[in-house]
Image (cartoon, rainbow, N blue to C red):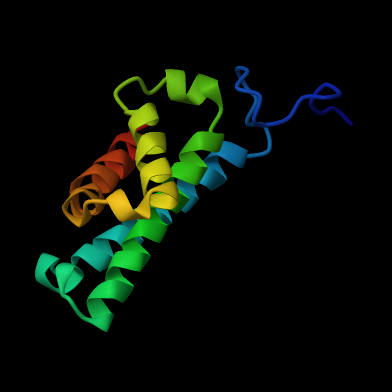
Length: 129
């Protein structure tokens, strides 16, 4: 039985390191988060920004989607990220940190733009390869 060398994992970023399909599963996760973002933004910007319980729930869901996207992106192998230089990997991480740790400074317009434009663009870029 052959397998990865002792101490190596599918996340090492080495060429061929995705022998067990780990990256493909993470990309499938990302595709699901893209669909969630599209569903949420389908409710409309007015509903998302509404000063109501429903608006608050949509905003909380949107922030959670951003955090999930960034968490998966952060764990992708460096070799995969290097192969996709058009993706703003650092920007994804910065947005996650802002949403997760500085919620009082989060611009809901910025979050909306990420959900409505940036996340679908990320999904499109990664599904092309």
